[in-house]
Image 1 (tube, protein in one colour):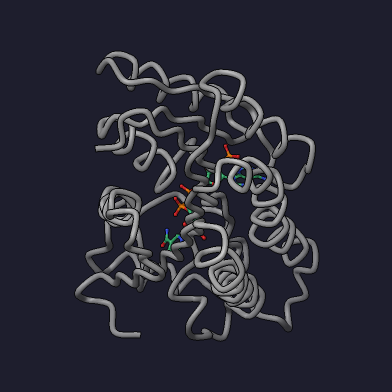
Image 2 (cartoon, helix red, strand yellow; image 1 turned 180 degrees about the vertical axis):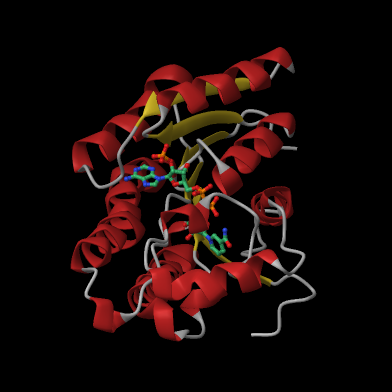
Amino acid sequence: MLSGRVVVITGASSGIGAATASVLATAGAKVVMGARREDRLHAIQDEIAARSGEALAMRCDVTVRDDCEALLQAGIDRWGRVDILINNAGIMPLSFVKNLRVDEWERMIDVNIKGVLFCTAAALPHLLAQETGHIVNISSIAGKRVIPSGSVYCATKFAVNAFSDALRLELSARKNIRVTCIQPGIVATELTDAITDPDLASFQKHIKGIEALQAEDIASAILYAVQAPAHVNVNEIVLRPTQQEQ
Ligand SMILES: NC(=O)c1ccc[n+]([C@@H]2O[C@H](COP(=O)([O-])OP(=O)(O)OC[C@H]3O[C@@H](n4cnc5c(N)ncnc54)[C@H](OP(=O)(O)O)[C@@H]3O)[C@@H](O)[C@H]2O)c1
C-alpha cells in the first residue's frame, strides 16, 4: 500500500497519467495531478474523491519551468512532502523528416525532454532533503528502437532512457532515490491524435488493427515499481502488446 505517500503525476488529464492517478490513489497515495486541461483534471479529482481517495488537480504546462515548480510546491503545501514524481506528460506527432514539421519537433523536445528535466529539477531538492524518493519516467519502446517516422519522437525517448539511467547512477546508491524507466509499446490512448502527417495514415491504421495495451496495464506496472520494498530499485519495465512484434 501507498498510504501517506505523496505522488506528483504530469500529464494526468488522460491516458496513462489519468489511469495511474486513479490506481495509485486507490492504493492509498495522495496524488497531485498536473496537465493543461483543467476540466479533465477536476473530473478525475472528483472521481477519486468519490472513492474516498485524495487528489489535487493543478494546471501545469511542463514546458514552463515555473509551472513545474508550482506543481511540486502544491504537493508540499497540501501534504508536507513529495515522495514520488511520475514524469508522464508527452506528445507524439510522428512525421517523416522530409516533411519538415519543425514546429512539431520543437514541441516534442520541449514536452518530452525539457518537461522531464524541469519537473525533476523541481522535485530533487525535496527528495534530497528527505533522503528518500522515487522518480518514474515514462519513456517508450521508441526509446529502445527507432522507426522511420519516429526520428524526433524516438530521439526524445532515447534521451529519457539516458537521463533515467544517469539519474539512477548518480542518485540511487548515494542518495536513496530510486529511478524507474517505463517503456511501453502501443497503448490505447489519445496519443496518436496529434499526428498530422498524411504519410502516416497507414501506420495509424496498422496500430488500430492490433490489440493494444490499456492505460491501466501501464498503471499496474508503475504501481508494482513504486510499491516494491525500499531495497528494490525497479530500473526498467518494458511492456508490449502480445500482438506487437517490433
Ligand atoms: N500511447 C502509447 O502508445 C504510448 C507508448 C509508449 C509511451 N507512451 C508515453 O506515455 C506518456 C503518456 O501518453 P498517453 O499515451 O497516455 O497519451 P495521452 O492520453 O495523449 O496523454 C498525454 C498527456 O500529456 C499531457 N501533456 C501534453 N503536453 C503537455 C504539456 N505541455 N504540459 C503538461 N502536460 C502535457 C496531456 O495533458 P494536457 O493536454 O491536458 O496538457 C495528457 O494528459 C507519454 O509520455 C507517451 O510518450 C505512450
